[in-house]
Image 1 (cartoon, rainbow, N blue to C red):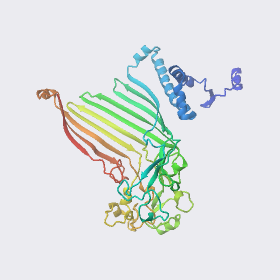
Image 2 (image 1 turned 135 degrees about the vertical axis):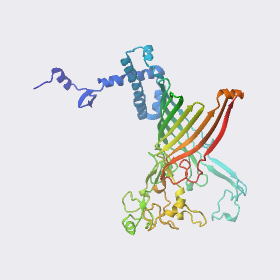
Image 3 (image 1 turned 120 degrees about the vertical axis):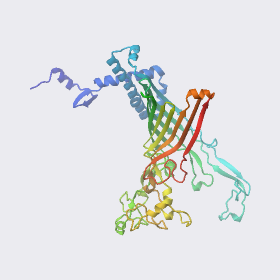
Image 4 (image 1 turned 90 degrees about the horizontal axis):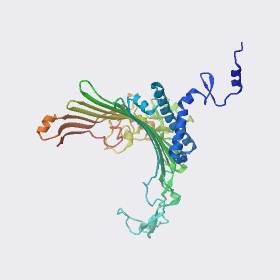
Length: 516
């Protein structure tokens, strides 16, 4: 039986090209109720802000010039449009629920909302942290027989024999730097969007902020190649880098029926970094990370490549069946053959180290009961890599051939036929396997949670303090860095201050506050 009406048949013949599939049926995007309800108000409001607030829209043009067409459209259509659409949609929803269609009566219904602030900023800054003489070729005189540090100076000439003639050669000028007339400002463009709020008589409060920062024409001092001779260093504009992230804060404060006042505030933040572009000469020298085999472009600043440590050779059979690896032997570290060509070489390196944490977090606690008060601040970092130089000394006898130096106690658990499950290579006085190369063996989990500060105080009742001619008298005891929780896999002392640096000390303070 044919059930299509004339109207439906006409609709099928004249399809709108702007259609989307929703639940198995076609619906015009522009005529859909969801589009009209949630997005059209945001589009209209955004247009009014651009045209009415800024007139010519100069700021919008500058934004597009800074981020290009793609970045400008993403910022305008995704960030700005979604924010305004969300605000307008929520406002309309409340207006419909409470049937309040003027501003005064609408705000009276929002008794639970104390403060709501939307903020946004955009700006550009330069970088002046370079020498004022960066663009110039610099020559310096060298007339004396001693250098500026009191050592022997051989002047500015060179003996063709390479021996400096056994003494001082004629003096003159030497070059310290090659100039660059094309050098220009390093430019950082940053956009911030945030929202602050407080609800329920300011009991619940918080903020949410997103930022996007892009740096172009990064200033870098490049070392000169040998053929340029002495003083080949040169300042150049070397590429671009971006950072983006968010921070969320949420707190709650109140007072219990039995008199306990409390304020709990937590925060979590994250950011991501990426090298966008670099000249090949800069990318290859490892100044921004990576090495000459893999470019750091597209990766995090200071990220590193290295070999994948794939356990310990436990038998000669494993050695024989593995890819050709110079120095391979029973008890030695086995490296993964990534390209499966049967040889362990520099092409078997992979990105193994990212210094950017997955996220950071914190918690502030304030408690007050009668005359006592307690405050705590916890701070942590999760998902951050650390390259442990300590392991090179603690796990390898061959790290230093100086016999009288102390060795790490981890060597006592080194691999041996009687200790076949150990992850520490067998003892040896020579490093034929090149086991101190950059590899995952030295990459450790640097996550931690620290009790940054804790303080317990007691305020003397006002009746007593006034008898002592004081407005306020308070005794307290505080401690900094009292507790550190770290990963079991971390072999150092303090993941916040790794390698051979001293751990952050614990400080305990007793004191009093007196007010007159």
